[in-house]
Image 1: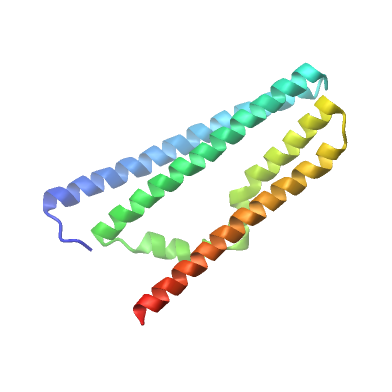
Image 2: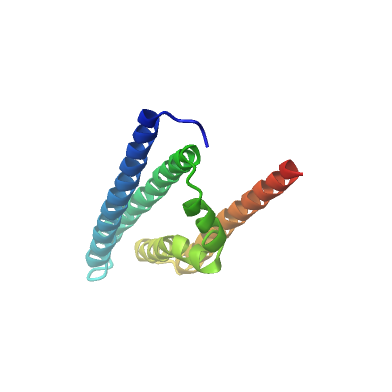
Length: 171
């Protein structure tokens, strides 16, 4: 914990609250837009199954996926800043609790990656409707699973390396 003047402390608290509120609003807006895009893609494709409607639905899915990925990146950057502020203010409970009770748990991994499962399934279905090839129905969920697995293994290895570095520095 750094030694802060009352003014610096107040400024950090205001920034912390602003970041927290901004993340909450952005998350709500992202969920709303994704719901509209996904529902729209389903409503466009499933009555017709033709090339045009399936192509439009695929584009809506890709826009939704890009929105999801960029939102996850911005949220990650905001959390990094929140953790910096917590460290400066001497707040340790939220991050400690997250690491102890949430990070790396099987149910959190499923919750965090369920959108990718939905995206890969729907993209596979839309590609099937466009190209009339069953290959897409099989390969897209497999590719999605492999991508999530690689991402989660990377995150796990990163956490283990950080733990070993902290342990080595403590010795």
